[in-house]
Image (tube, rainbow over all chains, first blue to last red; front, side):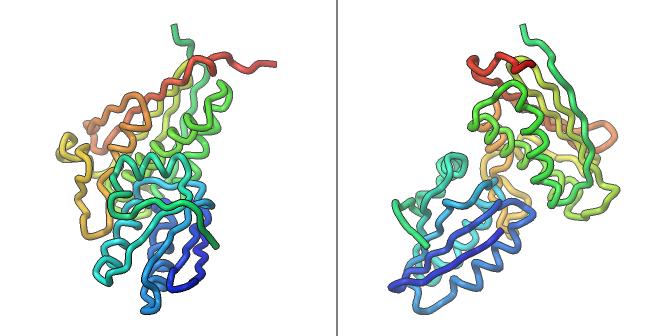
Length: 106
Length: 153
């Protein structure tokens, strides 16, 4: 897993490159934590265009970050999910709290 | 009538680094009957969920080389059957465990959607505790008709 970030006009863009499962969850969690808590950031976009695989462990990682950023009033958006990730997001209702946006990114 | 084309059994230590290996092997096992990309993706996701359950819950992250996961596959002309079993702690209440969003580890950022994903991505699933301890998850994936022809030489 590779976590790439760029901040532009107070928006933090994060690209997850690789596979998000139990093996990579902890690293991804820590990498996201390191970049998200920036007082200049008022929105976060997570780009999944290069995420080749994700299972429900990934949902747990994203939900955890959502809960933490919600306390700081920073919304998180999802961009470019694969068809497989899309189905998991739809199934779990994740888009209700982390809406999908078009376009992006790094 | 479904024709049994191939069988495969593998045993791996219950370590998280084996998840990607397990799902890749099961996906590769199906390639002979030309599944669609979506079908392969569904199978990989369901296998990953089942193996994660073994690593995280059955063996409670001990990551010991003696804690094994067994994966048995049968490939039919129109279907895959994959059985994923462990000898871990078993599931006290299987019905409860299969409810969406149910998790025994809410503080560890678990979504509780593993079985729901398996149910959604595969055509059938059965979950049973083994007499000697542990759990067996058996799933079937029916392939679309246009893929039934077996590629031959």
